[in-house]
Image (cartoon, rainbow over all chains, first blue to last red; front, side, top):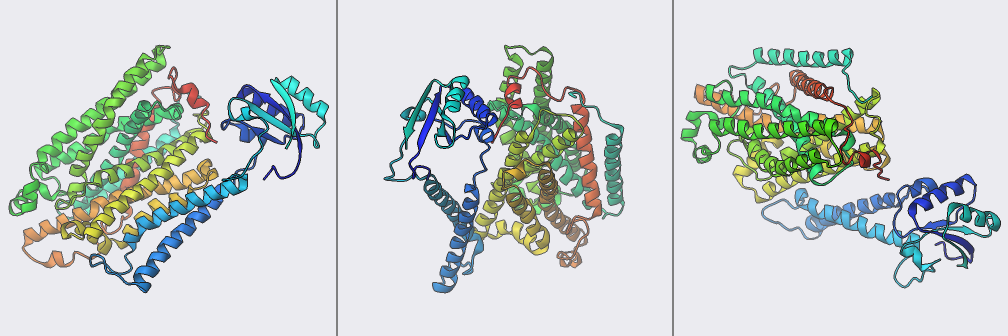
Length: 174
Length: 419
């Protein structure tokens, strides 16, 4: 979603996640507004220092799960009681215990697929989508902090990168 | 504060609880039928419940050591102290085992010689369901658990005092832990068949031991959460933080779901196969204990499932205490429902045999105090046993530093961070 507008970003690369965490903290102290942080793997404690809001994906997951529960349970109820009443092993038409395993599976399936699709949509990922990378190395061994040039003073940022030990500073239009 | 010291008020409260339990047991004894069925079934239910909680403390500590887990090291003394209770619980179970020989109680249908002779099913099972297996199984297998629990705690304490960077005490614990897992895994199943499943002597379920063990496991996690919060509230265990509680909350949530899975699997297979000798177990509970039957699944599944689903509720003391208390009661109720119907049927069957009349059998579906519903005496007995368990654990805790030293995982545990 973030890549729609044309921005000029100035970004610094770090070699170590500890350096990155320290740098993010000091950016917060200096009141420099971080555009985003890119890491090759999830860094413990990064959410906290970036003061990110908790993801709402799990709420969506709960709703999808509930939807799966209802679909399976009401679906089977309609099929086996109303539409095509069938006797299995002498059990009543509305055999709730027999529905439970399928209801459970459908809950998991709906939640899993729903959350995956939602996550892809929200993150602007998916088949055929071309994402611009700031630097290919942030998917390998570099940790990156990016600033939007329109929002910060370039001099401050360069000073900041120098003080926090960034190994490289570049800028790029995305 | 690393050294726990029991305050006078805590001791008074716990002695009060034990006194209440004792009074309730005496009252039960004197208001009972000739065989003291209500008294002995309460005794069995509570001894077994807390012995299994203690065994689960040992089991989970061993599982953690074997899995190289570090998250729980800051409060592992709690599980070590629970595991020491195995010895006390075994004493109670040995009393029950001796009772089979001397006719102190009539909890088990298979222990009654005249019934076994005329009953093909009981006769067929008599090579396992007999007083010798009961008593010596309890002593040998339970003794093995108690011995391992004692050794593991000793090693852990020696590590505190003499541990160094060779971690030889931890490595020795690792050997014990690896041995513990299969030993407890197999023998607890066999002993649960004898102690618990055989109160319905005609019935069996291959899933039952897992189900009863998981029930105790959830109760063990509940007690752990409650005790950690209690100790933290009194200024101890400051290194245990919301992250450790979060993980315990996850275990409470996950194993409640696992318990439900087992409960349902046992139910559904029996319901679907619809074989009379298997359905009898659920038919009895469904017809004569409907409130307890649905309360069991309601409390033990719906409450933790919805109350602990969110992250933040697994990290807050308030919600954890609320759910833990309910889970402890809920799984005690689960044990109640495993013990009482079978015992009552046996009692009715035996008095039927004795009087050769039909009057008792005809009243089988009537309300029976202490069986159809847990009465005040049952709750009093529960509080008594709970008081004993907590008192014992706290006394054991006060014998050593609360937070272990020189454990290879203690640093990791102190910096444990989950979100």
